[in-house]
Image (cartoon, rainbow, N blue to C red; front, side):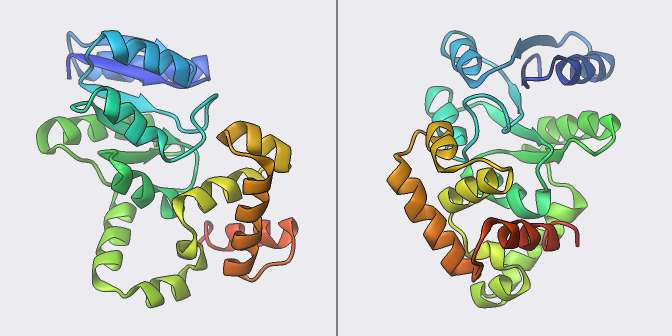
Amino acid sequence: MKNILIADDHSIVRLGASVIIKEKFNGTEITQASTIKEVYDHIKFQNFDLLLLDINMPGGNNIKIIQEILNIQSGLKILVFSSYDENIYALRYIEAGAVGYLNKSTAMEELANAIKCIEERGKYMSDAVKDLYVQKLTSTKASLDKVNPLNKLSNREMDVAKHLIEGHGILDVSNLLSLSSSTVSTYKSRIFEKLTVNNIPDLIELFKLHTEE
């Protein structure tokens, strides 16, 4: 892990992560990016061993961003570093190609442990994510959907739902995900139908219910 790219739109997070990495990994070169565009600019011209990626940053609000990054630099290991609940998002991003998912509420010390795990084993999963992975392997889709109805949503539907519960309107989501407003409306209808909710407050409550367990 000699070259690490830290991508986060908060300078204090980039600084904190940089300090931890430099303390634990001698000789590591760190590059920083505050937008997804900057990430692309860096990885097109420089090879990195690891990308520490916040998914809730300008231009990076969808799961497909993982594959887009890997299409540019296929050997890059991506550790998602996010405030979004790992119970909902971790497996989706790992299945999309990330090598790990670390929640920002975790102590910074765990960041060093996550990077060490990736360096030694190629992947990182917290105990909670490991449990989710085992549960997915040993359960049927129907039983998983019953335990957590959010599993019914596709990755794209999850992207849309995530923005809706954050208070964004149809036009906002359209701009954030580069989709037409009619497409977003269609996704919204599918989300409501799959989750049997009738409005945004109900959707918010459902997300709260299945992220605070």
